[in-house]
Figure 1 (cartoon, rainbow, N blue to C red):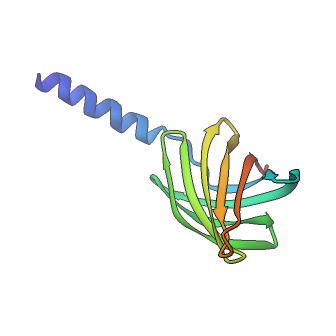
Figure 2: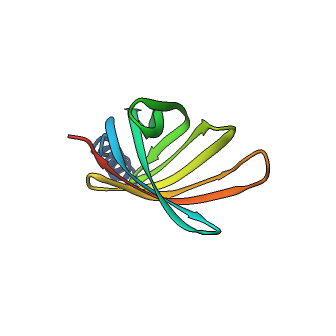
Length: 124
């Protein structure tokens, strides 16, 4: 039983150690779903990763960035928030190789809700 437990702990540690490091710049698109149809916009995120913790910034381009909060990566699941324009944008995404794909949601102070699809690629 102890051998099995040690093996399980070793495998978990190995999986954590081999988790992808997403530190760096990522750019791509944001497909905003609005009542009058879909609108495309740019997205640019700069990640700093330490273990499962993420920090950094996000915005429409490299020169307009807003601080990231509550950033986490567990396996290939990424979550973080960015506050901009009086709203907190909540991102839930999945790392797929050199792509991060997911959803963005926010509610503005006037009650207007926003949903979008996010697709980022690592900047080389």
